[in-house]
Amino acid sequence: MKVNIPEEYQESFSRLMKSAPPEIRRNSKIQKTAAMYLTLGGEMLARRYIELSQTDFPDGSELFDYAPIVEPDTESEDSSSEDNDESE
Image (cartoon, rainbow, N blue to C red; front, side):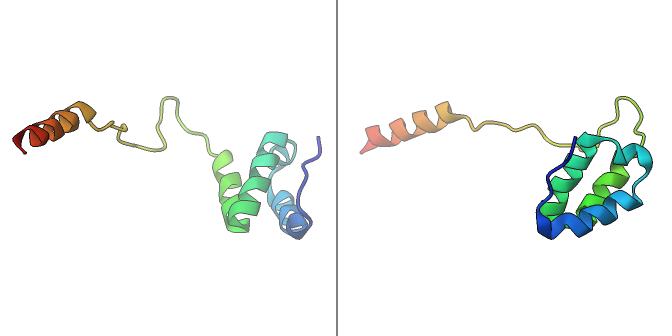
């Protein structure tokens, strides 16, 4: 499967693939994602992605620790605005 690379990124993509190990060069999913990172963030970002794709992470590890999104409590805001309307 051939990855479509814009002409202005052909040379950078070629450098990336030449420096990548053979198993990366044969993986079309990694090639597509590296091409996306190349077009969005440049060669350094694409190179970093290729390096990380080779990293073996332990099972169950989390790469990012994030706080869950908490929706604002709209009921308490509605009731407080009604209280203000009654006092006028």
